[in-house]
Image 1 (cartoon, helix red, strand yellow):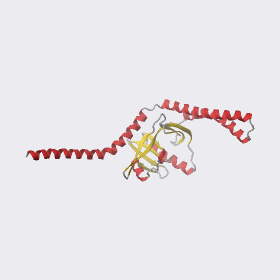
Image 2 (cartoon, helix red, strand yellow; image 1 turned 90 degrees about the vertical axis):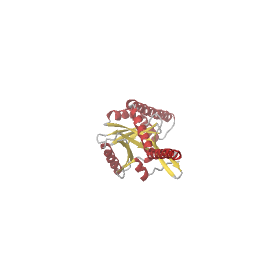
Image 3 (cartoon, one colour; image 1 turned 45 degrees about the vertical axis):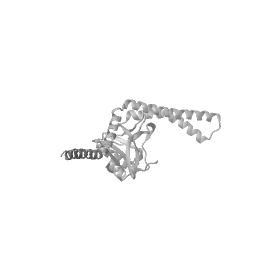
Image 4 (cartoon, rainbow, N blue to C red; image 1 turned 90 degrees about the horizontal axis):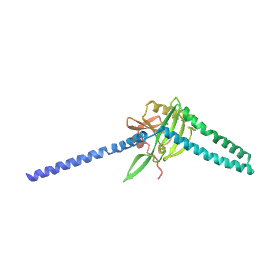
Length: 244
């Protein structure tokens, strides 16, 4: 009887161990998903939007100042050397552009109907045996958020871009065709009407795929097809083509 009792204790212990492993395996994907959600929430929690805009202004000012210095040096050279008239006109225009652009940029910020901070994500690929696993990570660095400026019709018309945690540039949103513009604006209006908690962006998914977070889930909206997927379903249907 003692032998059977010991065996039963060992059996119960084994059952509990197996049960624990099964639970762990089943919830692991959810844990990873929750980690990403928490990371996103924390990034927005600690975002100081006023300071972030001031930092962007400084980056833009320094960028334009660098362009101005190059323009000034070229104009000095132009006056000391013989130069092609077309190039001369270009340099003078560049000089005037650099002087006015910063004021134009601050005017856009001040007069924007709506300003949205869009967190940058990137994809990491892990290959385990024959399985490919994709995971989304937040960029690292000081500048983690793109800033999109919207019209009153919920269409983005101006953007400040960041890449790999650094300021990357700014400008109007442009497209090669009217059809693309129409699809882009329509898609954004549909997303914004859902009142997402956050907009997200991942360069590896392409500019016509927008991510957003709603009710602690991340969705991918493929604008050209006017279709929406939960993020894991999107990756199954459209696996990203990552460079090594």
